Image 1 (cartoon, each protein chain N blue to C red):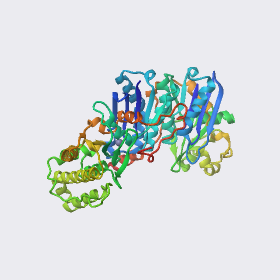
Image 2: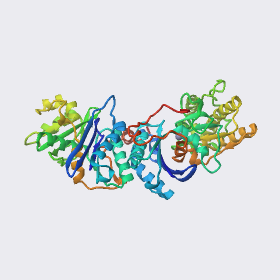
Image 3: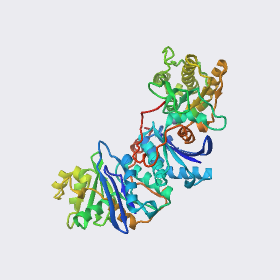
Image 4: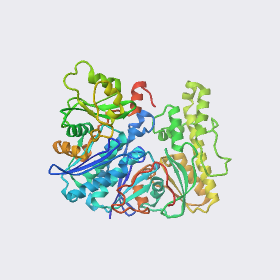
Length: 231
Length: 334
Ligand SMILES: [Zn+2]
């Protein structure tokens, strides 16, 4: 199967054959993310490593949260490929894939993947080391985040944190008593392999039922709800 | 062999199947949600496109009675338009084409409005002059061949449709404002208020509509809320007449400056009754034919993109895998 994610700034593509990873790419952004240019080219490379489209049994795609445009490029690509080929498709929450990647890289049993959500916030959510969610995903600022990590009701060992959001709020997290891998560490990046592995275990759907996970409503909707008037 | 075309540059999710200049299907899914916001919100539009893209493509194929296996190329609007919206259509089109190794035809949206006139029945042969007026664009296109057009004039600020939507909002009408403003204006006296016909003394062929909105703001401020509401029909009539006047004045000037044997319209504003009548009157006076395509082909649609694609450069597989959208940029003759 093939798996890819464009919800973060990295264009991530992987392929597994009978569970064995055989293709892995993670392209850093240039001035802006390369998704629109790089995704389909690398997906095609992944498919060729499997021996062509006839060999692909399943398509897995990261559905977010992350950047809105990134999520859409990934989900639209997955849906278009699935519609064109008839191959079943499945959506994988990007946080779960990041959690699984962190768990795989560190061996940690409890993981808190954090994605830079811009506007001074992160997307996050506790998972086990295999990417199973232990709570609902959230978006919050650094103060609420450290409260979540050290506040009352939290017991046991601190989770392993990683991801672009952990890098962004490194100082806050260190102050809260957590240890972080260096910024360049692979721990902070999700892998195509984890998308594939989580996608292999998930239920498939038709392309028209693939749902993105934005975790945030459009600003215009917020303003409309808040002010009750048109923007 | 059929061609699939996809258009998502603004707020309508569109797919069509064409066989040459013949439309086999033309599906347009309008996003009613923008009415709540009083305008097109890019993020809202992009979310809708993602939900609708594959279902609209599948509906277009079903309507045409063809399957993915029957397609021999995929066309898609590459720009200009809302970048996030364009990317949904482009990602979908590339992903449909690539596994089948079909060619992809990136298409210019404005070329699409021109090319709507090349479709059956009664395709219009170039050369002709095409006035494109919509919520996003206002321009005079000189069409000398099928492959492109020359921009003879364009708006320096707001688009004509944008100006109409803004007026409709000021007068408390819904979105999109065009049809409602036209309905209201039908009961009004276009002479009751004086609106500036901008650019009338400017010798060029460019347009400007922002001053018109400002004029309406001042008039309604002077009238007060109650009186503005009471005189809404007159205000709508005067405003609409000023928009139409400017469009037709520039069209007349372009006709007089060049030897154009026919006139065509494109864009959502082309559905406006008074504009159509004024352009028809001008053409009659000049003794040249006026090509009227139906409303569905004037407003954004994918059939026009498929039509333009027939005269655009296709990209062979795998050359387009890294092709990106443009929000503004290349257009006209390339
Ligand atoms: Zn248009």
